[in-house]
Length: 174
Image 1 (spheres, one colour):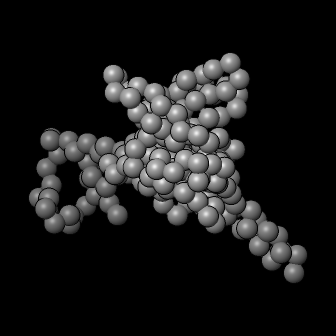
Image 2 (cartoon, rainbow, N blue to C red):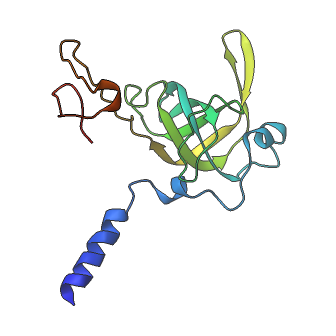
């Protein structure tokens, strides 16, 4: 009986995720990016879970402001690989975040509450941002690069297009 219990405990522990619960699970009642822009007073203090691609990171005296290009999130809270975006938002995080780690083009998801909108310039264009006071932040890992397999032009394979024959060093055998 003990080995079965130990196996189940290890299996459950193996399924545990390092992604914080507020990042994995969307709040019951939330506001969209568009709603926060149109009615900032109505949605002030509302819990949100938003994510996207980091555009810039600005460290201030006691906090860090991250400008994020919003993207739709999947079920686990990870920003999807799409060009669709509702716009940009600012994430206000207490403390210092290293801009070399929280670098431009990295995927990030934040959970927190909405504050008043903030206007800044993008180039010479004034832009209004919804601001999220961040309680939880998750920087998504960089996906590993796909391995490129080189096929030597000096190897001859008489069964080339069909893949039959003996395994040669220049191709994978499944």
